[in-house]
Length: 203
Image 1 (cartoon, rainbow, N blue to C red):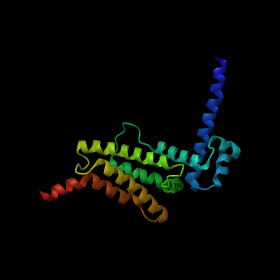
Image 2: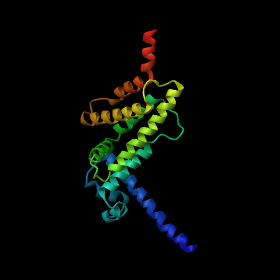
Image 3: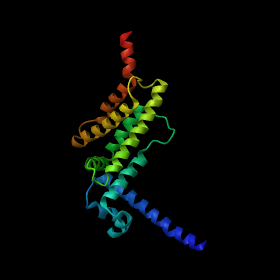
Image 4: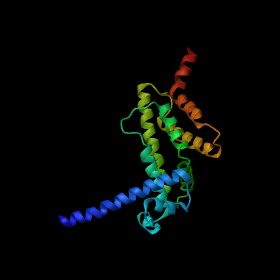
């Protein structure tokens, strides 16, 4: 029993150190975006040598993908929480605008992962499938309640919504003088109210 506890102690500390590295990496990339020189800054914030950091994340790509996954997890909507789609989509955009470095990181990684040989290729395939499925379930439930137009595929609208968020944030990165929130809210309103507006126009 003592031996088992001894194994659990170092293992638990290893997990905690890995989590601390991810937290520090999230902060650094949020502030500065992607960059090889930032690995030393991450190690400094955690208080470890660079080789120790690489022990937990043997490759730079592995660390970057873990950061993207952590960002997604922290930004995920709690299970069972019902939110207005316009408010939720706007919050997603605003969260991205508050973390331009992470937005740039995700955009850069997703573009590079289009290459099947990239280590993040399957990760991003599954990421977009999971995100699309989650959004589609919410939209389908709203369709059943009559709050979202029912004459369009929830799956298609989910993919379009994610594409709108990604695209508007990329445009904002290029030209920060633009405000992506009103454009996104317009798109969400089209999903929610265009069908009703069309029906009213015909009466």
